[in-house]
Image (tube, rainbow, N blue to C red; front, side, top):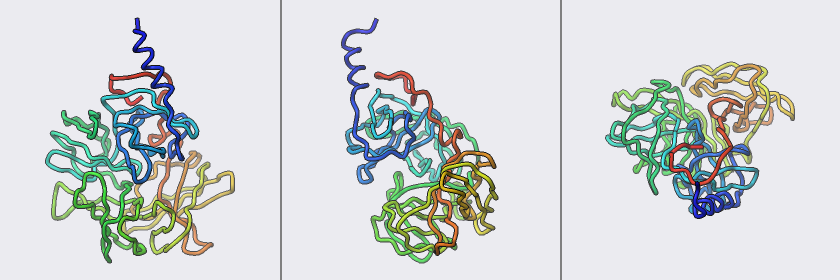
Length: 330
């Protein structure tokens, strides 16, 4: 029988709601807080399947790592706490006792006794402490030995003709991304960006990978860059059914395209070379985001694609509540 104190605590957790400025996660999403970004005003949550999602909240510092939250419309409610979380993403860096995992734009630094190889797409269970994530047993389920691409967010540290360096979790000296053939406008240090990068082997380090920029979007909406798109005031979104798709080739190869029939008509996006397999097929319902073309008649360039009902949109079970020390995400 549950004590009156435990019932009171459970009721308090369920009743606590934090005002959300906006939410990148669908209504009804539940997950465990695994990162806080006070500057951006967001928390990153891991849902039941391990997919990472960003949720804008008014005061991210009030949500400790491990807090279980539920998103309903513009309200973010605390529903408990977890000591463990499942994470899924691409390893973009492997250190001696740590690795960095990129998933859906967010990058998490994870301490590990036996880090997975850079470039692998993995699912892992981590212990969530007050200010850190750790995978002490080193166990990771590998879905793909060499993922073709990844998405990550960061802020600009520096930029030259061939590279851009971003401040990203787990990279004290910054994360260097080669520009390849992508033309990017000069961005001021501190500018928040979302980058889609192609992953390739590092000739100088067999255990490392090389990141090459495929497309870049400035998070504040002031600029957009991919293949010389220059500066724009907005981005392009489309949600609907895929009516045609041609996957892009590897970095340096041929671009692809995807046409989505939404409520405002059909929109065709260019899929830049090196984007990697989208996982979408004709008939799928998807949510796409891209940067505008250089002119009003040019198609937008795809930056992100999520397939409804697929791995990136798994929401888990919405039942239950209270304080949970069992460690599950949901």
